[in-house]
Image 1 (cartoon, one colour):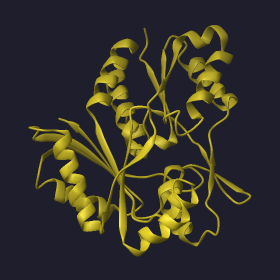
Image 2 (spheres, one colour):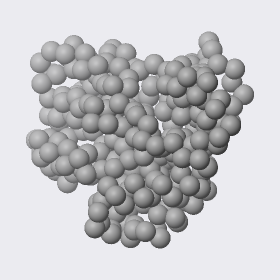
Image 3 (spheres, one colour):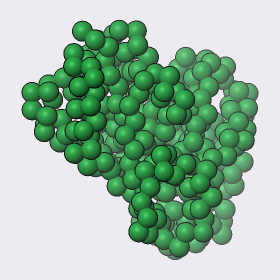
Image 4 (cartoon, helix red, strand yellow):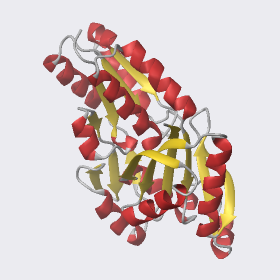
Length: 286
């Protein structure tokens, strides 16, 4: 059997160089500013997006690739590697219709669909990007699809994640909190800490006053999540502000021994829901 091919969508926020290194096929979602549409991280980079976002009068909208787009991606892979199975990992079905589009694409390929496995990550951003990278590394070692899926699920169960949101504006615009709550929270300098539950849905963990206290609280949460663990791998997603990610890594280094360290951008699609200044931190045991 040929090497397993790994597919994902752009919300996995995998650094482009890493995706290229491991041969990961990334299918972009679409971001729309008014009548203008951009392919996530293709037509618009994170740097361009976060520069434009604060001056946008309306919240950008997003849409997942159509089943036909996924079908074309799968067909192209099967044409090039006819004997290779495909593992296709996607953002939580509780947050986007991307998983459903990929599943429909598989069904449209009839007998060819038998070699495609579509996975609902139940996560977002590098929270499942780390799963995709792990799968790609195992695929490069020649592991079978079922062995890869088992290892990825083990990683998913052990990985912990939190998002620190700097402003309530985008949560309010996206309908996740009321306008009055957003105004009050802004006046009180509230910094929400968010996570994703077992069903793949975003929820508020805590609301902390001030960013410095919020960063300290995130580290406390990680220590509570991983009792007795010293060595960890970590990825920090930032909104085109690598210095903020480096600063968090330095703070985290005071409490854990850091093995693998990844700095990545939170892409435009995910960023449209959380806004500038967000930090997303993903930790898993080394």
